[in-house]
Image (spheres, one colour):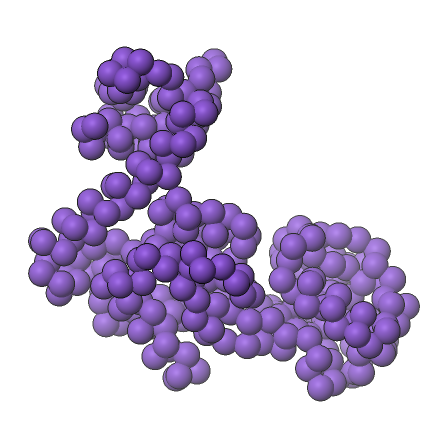
Length: 290
């Protein structure tokens, strides 16, 4: 199977159409269509279902996707090894993260030592970052929380207390810290189900028999911050992710009973990759200097 055909297949699969896939590769649509059709005719099967301008993966296409991604990833690593003799004089490192806060300090540490390596960051939720790792779309993931799965190699990067934040005129905003019991009956906003911060907070209030009045579920940090600024309710956030503002006040929870953790993830099979190993070493150095 020619690599150009595999690249055409991956481009269409990622972008959902032949025209967008062609643009991503700098090719014309007829060229990429011809490559896909040749692949389908060669094996007497259909890789995509054409629905107007959209192209949806067939059952066979979905099975081929992770294999094609892995093949091209391994080819890229082999080319890099042979070309640069392990000196990391050039290459590309792709990161995925649930937020920009710690990944940026890791990137800064890495770029100081390896400025010639091209870096990219995809931001998403935990599920999408892990899916990108599984599908070889990224090399390293930065996640809040531990997923105990032998598929991945994980490294603890940092532990962060979770704080409450309030509009400046809220009664609790006058205090630097509060016991967790002070949240009893308070109107609160929470993140979407599956949020690591939400899970940690709900576990802590259950352990302390505290029942806030949950008024709204909000699916992004930015929207949560805006809702708190408008006085709709209190919010909780990792201290590392809190963005100060004139309208907002951060309030510590006494004893820090709630915390989240940042972990670095890579596929266990790729832990020996020189590029991945070098990034993990730079991240560890950044952690020690914090």
